[in-house]
Image (cartoon, rainbow, N blue to C red; front, top):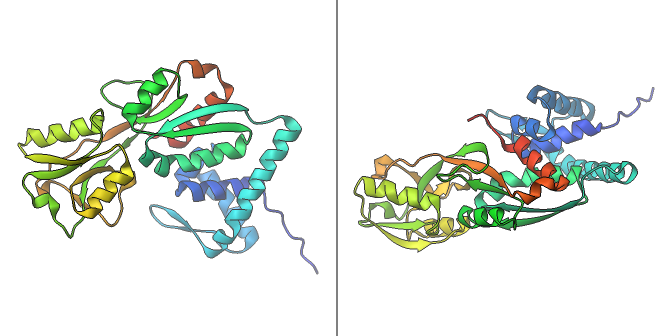
Length: 289
């Protein structure tokens, strides 16, 4: 007796792709606007039909199995084709231009899965992405040059609080640059709220320092820290295993947790496309704080 082959359901593939992009079931649930248990159920149904697991689960993250790696490309193509077909036949999905701003460390860590989910749902939307530091993004949002920006909140509340981001002292372990006096320091640009905070913390405990490098670029901060030239300060999402996390045991003050918010320009509120992106980011990234 020949068994009928069961189709792969779109909802199962959406849950699988979202889980891969987010790295966690909770993150996937936010992306597809379903409960975590519902996402887990959809992935389980997919695995039952395939007959093999597509994800390996541990306490903190999800990774693809070899079967999952084989499937992911096809899953993305199927979702894209479905989205394009619906848009063509029903006129679904928003159209229009969206100018999005984000610091480079947040872009890599948080924005990629959001952009993927948005592109699947709204393939005709045009997105311009500007990666700059918070101090440069906020004036551009206020001037209407950028529609939406994911930024670090300073002393003023301008938008929707999404989550908290920890920051750390880091350096290359083999060079022990943190033992030098004065402390060689890599900092962000002068207008940066995090730079102001870091210097204030050092001065509060009378730690002498010397700024040897400054840049708004996270990749630049990482490179300088790896070179052994200076101690740098990085957000949690930018940490790399090659860098040692430092703290009070190394004579450095504790750093505060940063608030990450979503801000938007006044004129963008009339744009359907920008409104859709704004809601997408809120649903995907907002956490209990």
